[in-house]
Length: 482
Image 1: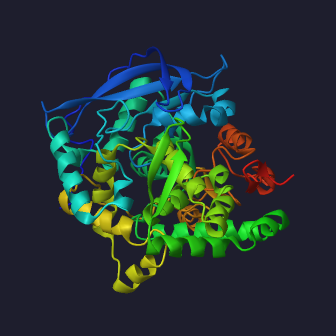
Image 2 (image 1 turned 180 degrees about the horizontal axis):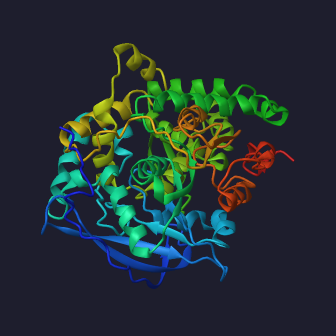
């Protein structure tokens, strides 16, 4: 059963007092990038309808504008996942937002269930969906629920509740109007906040767009396959890449077929620690490499080389090393419990997947693993609070800049085009050859800063985005061809 949310009427959380912020540092736990900020905690009711119930703290950080004559409307940064912390995300992309920060505060709210806001972490991460059987997934899900039960009622860790938290933070910090930047799942949060509080939003940037009506999931395997084949076709269309690898798509099919028959023993040095690792490289490991490498133009530049080495020389060590690298890069990035609360409320209950569609999914490198795994999780995980109009198409007069990577394996440009229909003053920009989340692409920092400066897409100069080029393909371990 999906819970309806009636807020703020009847809310058990009183209007927020001013939020006191003190000097602090925020950092990414793996990259150890550190950003000076001002931090505080806003206490809210976990269940907004129950007076005197459990209270949770929302971790809030503000990175002050550089200018002493700053603009009055900050940029709220909303992370993806679902389950990623805004503070950790910002620590990885701060340079890309530096131009905006010259004139505006950057505000980071670790969404309830993420980061330092009562993080709903589990022993097993999201990757379990892709590499485990359904019995193991079910056992891990029950174990996670049991571990979290003492400190969280997980049905209240959804987007419909989180946007009410954001509004309380805005009020507590004293901002009359705010701008929003959301990436991936954060675009869903941004759109729903805009739906609930349109009078508070000056402008919005959506990067890797999830349209409001979409229940994300069943099409991911198809989009990931499309993205991979587009990347390999781009390689084949470039003379240095074609000369070195021939048809990379054929190498992909060869490697996939070989691993479908049997796993390959590998011995490799862990790229992060240098320690020797021995394990059987499987089709599931390959799927992880292909899926996560496609997110990033930098990682994607390696794919023809990695697949070529495996196909032509039966050398799976480079693929295995890349698996260890991307596994570490994404490990712990998502709070699994919060992720499950969101998808088991906002996505999986709305799936309508036919037998024919499942057959199409089975032909991809991801297969039906993600879909099967999510359905198993959500048969166990409680369904939570969701507003009745949550998946209604969004229409808005607020200026909107929508960004997409042309090779995005999760939120392709077609998603942004669908969402853009609802924005009377919106502009959709596609960066060809880039992956999921275009924030760090060349020149986008300037485009976004100009957009926020004028709060209008009219006359916005985006020509530089058409000239942006992704990382060239590696033709050897030494890098791209000269």
